Image (cartoon, rainbow over all chains, first blue to last red; front, side, top):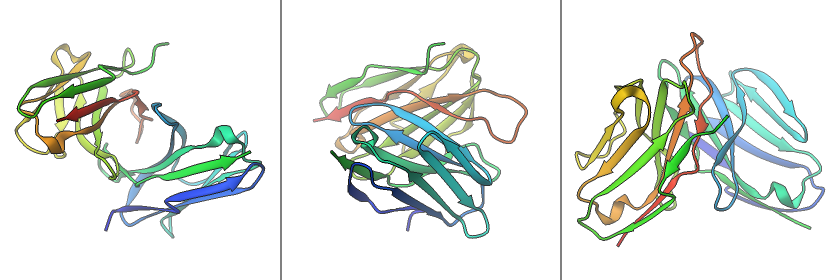
Length: 109
Length: 116
């Protein structure tokens, strides 16, 4: 079993819907990244979290360290949000990231 | 400011050949990381440089992979000889070396390697 699990693996929704992507991890971490990769594109960091909640535009990320769980929310989703969203954690005491498998999000107009 | 760049963007080679991937980190970033995603799997860590020194190479799959970072600037990742299972997308990332618990990593666009 992977140390970082994301759900769902694939998500299709209509424009305007509220989207939630979940990430659970089984190891001690120093920080958690939410990353975005558009088809054929590079990886872009959306958030880096170590506690609480962060908001950027229509994106919100939360983390619960005790429950080892993080969520990425997208409000008023738009077709341009279609991408693969990846959760990655920084293992405590190390500088390397451990990645989830990613969630492929498709927003239909 | 230029981001992390990688060259080439795509490489198609035959089994047994040699390929060298290059990564240019963001200027001034001492930390440089190599990652790989093989088909259908999650991205996995390969190794981490601090300047020209290998800090952690625990993710390197075998001795067919050689990473260098001479002078502490750009890095190369050589695969020799390439095998079919080496196909995938190779990402490079860099971060500053500030005295904090974690410095955000910035990713390059990746090199898609196909071994036939």
